[in-house]
Length: 334
Image 1 (cartoon, rainbow, N blue to C red):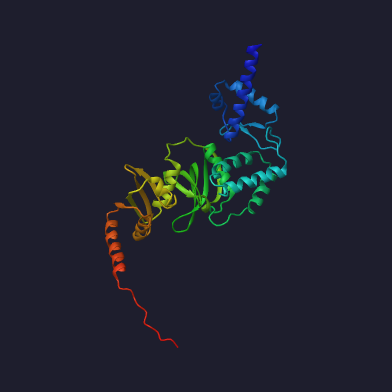
Image 2 (cartoon, rainbow, N blue to C red):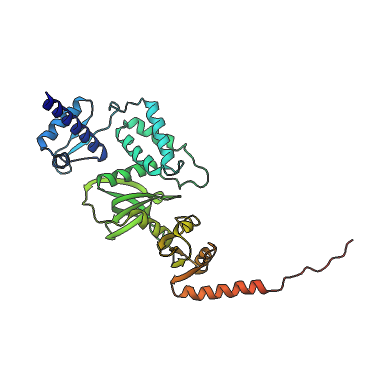
């Protein structure tokens, strides 16, 4: 009896694990699931049947691109929501993904993609329509299409290629084909880190600039990727500008990070309560003033011509400080 009870618990735990895997990714092959669960493909088929009997619509496809996937439906235990509850939940998650709740954007987006997977088509349309009524006061993120966010998040999860229209430097919109890796949220915008198949290199893209976002069924093997958040931050703060500069600032990294937005500079800790600041600008004087106004001692590391700009700026400041004040002439009272 003890062994039978243990087997029953083992089967229950395995079926719940299978359900969790099906919720994590759009499609799994039988061998992939068998490998994850440590069982045979035949056992996977039996466990899939158990889920179907419990009311979970698990679909099986044949051929290239086939496999097991959890289909959409409104009768999925243990989450049972009526139409009004489902719409209210989705719109609340949209608000969180848009930045209304500090630090909740990424978690809200993950939850929203899971909910979107099980919403009937009629409710998806209503959620898209209602999302247009969600607004954020000044300081929120740039508005993006929630459908685009969910499509990209799903493509990252399922490791399938994605495509979208994106403006070039001249403003011409071109179709881009990418292997999506991570969505990254800043204080102002959403970005996608992806491997650009046409340029054979990693790129970051602003989601609010994308049009006609779509995901394909073509799977790809995940590449060795850079740190997503660090790559996007460095691009936003430095690579997009004509000039990049590095400074050694005589203050702890935590102190400097609290003084300058993450979108304006990358701050890296150094030895002896110092840090390295990487930032960019289209004008060297501007980037110099940004670091000067932090109020800490600093040294220029790169580029060499910035040292000359330091001397020129110092002379201008000294000249402004020693110029005799202009005294307005006395005026007679009438």
